[in-house]
View 1 (tube, rainbow, N blue to C red):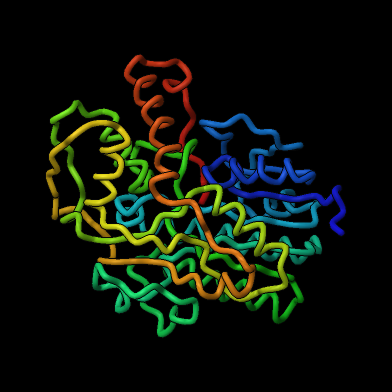
View 2: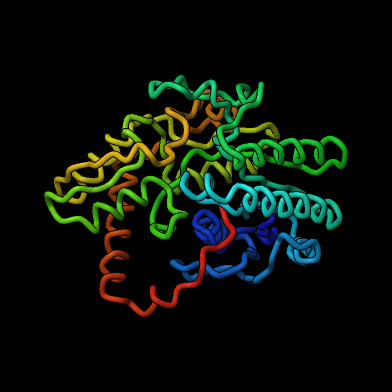
Length: 339
């Protein structure tokens, strides 16, 4: 039986997943410390303690991990495809510093359990060239050929995590997230991902307007709603499974179809201008959930339509507030280092 006083650290706690994870764990009786460069722009934290620390610095990682038992390591410099394709050196430098320092600090401070948030970006390009992509199995990350430097860094860190487990006995968990979305996340500014960007464009548009979409729209993805991400992450953390595990929906949709779903929710009809000069990433990416079903006896179950019905109204409200120059948005802090 779990000790309800277990002390947990969440890094990247000012970001989208981290902010939600704080609430998730608090509801389950954990003592939670959040760490990030900034507080969440969109959620009031219920963390028992929130520290502003820069985890690229060794001493800050030592301070962050002191006095806790479990670590959810979510901190990362990241964003949507437009962001990670334009600041490659910064992304790799920041994330390698964060993850190497955090793992060593976890060893020094004798952390009992360590969760690392990896990404579906680790999967090789050669398996993602067709929109009708075969769902990606965890064992298919090698031979390695991620499509961007963010994916290479994530795969590299997976190997460091595994080495700390093998050589230092650190009890580790590795989740490969597939396009997590939902309310209270970044929705503008260049770091937002496809569901948030499309929700914003529909919220800003009038009926009959034309919106711009990157790529030809036939590229495909699966999108995991935040509640499923949290359930899967917690289930993996509390399991005895230490190999990488997909946490993502296996509901594959094209970006054009994603626009249609959001359009229906918004009650608007729009035309689409496809900009094929912009980066679109791989042609297809989907999660194979065979292994998570075996390991956790569970799979993500929230449909894309249901998740977007919860996400779109929140983003629509943010757009309306921004148009009215809401003071809270005008003074919002810069984007945190979080996954």
